[in-house]
Structure formats: structure tokens, C-alpha cells
Amino acid sequence: MTDRQNVRRPDRSTAYLGAAGAFAVCMAGTTLPTPLYGLYQEELGFSELVVTVVFAVYAFGVIGALLLAGNASDTVGRRPVLLTGLGLAALSAVCFLAEDGLPLLYLGRLLSGLSAGLFTGTATAYVMELAPPGREPRAAFAATAANMGGLGLGPLVSGVLAEYAPQPLVLPFVVHLVLIAAAAAVLVRLPETVAPRRPLRAVRPQRPGLPREVRPVFVPAALAAFTGFSLLGVFTSISPAFLSETLDVHDRAVVGLIVFSAFAASTVGQLAVGRLGVRRALPVGCAVLVVGLVLLGGSLLREVLVLLVLSALVGGAGQGLSLRGAVGAVAGAAPAKERAASLSALFVVAYLGISVPVIGVGVLTGPLGLEEAGLVFICCMTVLAALAGARLARRPAPAG
Image (cartoon, rainbow, N blue to C red; front, top):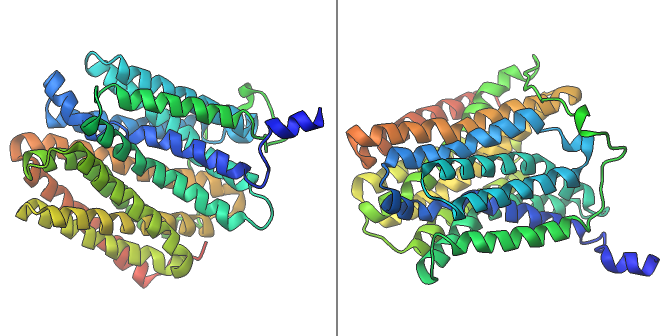
């Protein structure tokens, strides 16, 4: 019996890699539709505003999951929550496969956001808990790479499939369903790390909170996280239309590669925080964000592809620096018993950055045009990032 169990269960020294793989599969599904929105526009005939709303619905799903069940895995266990997240991701893919109008697109994005909200914190904790002694740094890297790498791989895979394979609105989601099934098969073989577990009825909604110690650093840290998420959100929602309509780039694989580069740069930025430290990472991240925003504005004004690519790389790195720096600053300032609530508040603000500015750009696109709407966004976000960076340069955040 012991031999059979050893065959069925993965080696504990590599179990965390299996959890990281499932993490990447889930996050890839959340960005999978990005290069495909142009095809949906052609098929259903909706405006750029609808594209941004469809994109932003995802953020509302993430926020809802964070508030209602962000701490559920501490109660019922990691694996049940992660398997539920994969189930929601599968339902999202089915919605896109069955799509016959906007309602299923909205529902698919909402389910995708709920799955990401369940996965983000739970999978990060699970990867870290599965790591054997001495491999904690590798596990931290694996969790970061799975999160941002998965987000980047989604548009890259769907862009390549849409450009070079048949049925561009079908095959990417079929492939994702196969990957979800493989990820679920891996998860059910991994050990549970939460004990003792309690029933589902013991789960309570998680209310964000701001203890007195966190308030001085929260506003600039939250502004930095909000601006970074806004940049990624607007970049991934409007860059496909800008590439095709303005730059005459119709290759969906190229669109996916450019979006992938932003998330890859974010991963590099997050890893750089280990060398810089939280105190320097936040103001430096804000400064890099400003440069990325200026490059994005230059690409819109001059209609130059190289500037768009540079904005993806520089802005993505700035987002990674500012996000991990903000998490470290808030965690460092918060008392241990209120740390989870403080971080929940930070992520709610950060994910609002994916929704509110994105919808704002969509609203302005009608009367102003895509480029002008993007420039209005860039000006607003540049001011926010500069204010946050100046505040953090004068009064550094605590080292978390």
C-alpha cells in the first residue's frame, strides 16, 4: 500500500512545482481572450466601450471573490478552494465556446475573475507551504512566475492559435479546458497543508480594514498599485485595437507577444524588489511607471510600434516594482493579526485600477477617439504615479 501511495503521490521536493503549474493554468485563462476581442467585435458589432466593459468585468469578479471568500482556504483547505477555482475557469471557457452574444461574454469574464480571486492568494500560500525546507526562495519565485507568467502566456498562446490555427474563437478555449483538466489531476494528488479543516459554513466574508499603523503608508502604496494595475489593464484592453486600427498590425500572434512582454517585465520587476528592498522599490517603481506611461503616450501620439513595445517592457517592470513594494510596505506596517485585512484593502484598490480607468477610456473613445482617450488616461495616471513617488521619496515606507 505504501508503494502504491508513493507512485500516486508526487515527490514532496517537487510538489510545489505542480501547484505552481496549476496556478499558471488558471491565470492564463484570465487573459486568454485579449487578442480575440477584435474578432468578437467583427462578429457581434459592438463598440470599443463594450470591449473595455467586458474586460473590466473580470476585475469585479476578482474583487467579489477576495471580499467574500479570500480567506476560505484557511478554513476548508487549499485544495478544495483551488479545485473550485479551476471549475470556475472551466465554466468561463465553456461560456466563450458557447458565445452567441454579449451576455455569455460578460458571464465568462465574471467567472474568470472569480476563479482568479480564489486562486491568487490561495495558490501563493499553497506553493510556499509545499516547498521543502531550504527551497522557500525557489517557491517564492515559482509563485511569482506562475502568477505573472500565466497572465502573460494566455494572450501569447491564444494569439498564436488564432493566427496560425483554425477556428480562432474555439481552439484556444478547448486547449485551456485540456490544461485545466491536467491541472486538476495534479492538484488532487497533492497533499493538503491546512489542518484542522472546518466545514464551508464556517467561512465568513473578509472585510478589508486599515489599522492606524498602516494609514500613513497606505495611500501612496495604494496609489502606486492602482496606477500599475491601471497601466496593465488599459494596455491589454486597448493595445489590440491600437495595433490593428492605427499601426496596421493585424497579426494576432504579435499582439499576444506584446502583451506577454508586459507581464514578463512585471515578473522581472517583482524579482528586483529583493535586491532593492521595499523602501527603494516603491519610489523607484513609481518613477519607472511614469517613464512607461510617457512611452505609451509617445506611441499613441507618434504612432510608433517600437515605443509601444518599450512601454510594455518599462511599464510592466514599473508595475512589478510598485506592486511588490506596496505589498511589502503595507505588510510591514500592519500588525500581524490585521495584516490579511490590510492586504485585502490594498488588492481591492489595485483591482479597481483594472476596471475604473479601463471603462473610462472606453467611454471617452466614442467622443474623442482611441488615441486621445488613451492620452487623457496617461496624463491622469502619470500625475498619480508622480504624487505617490514623491510622497514615498520623502517618507520611505517601512521595510516589509
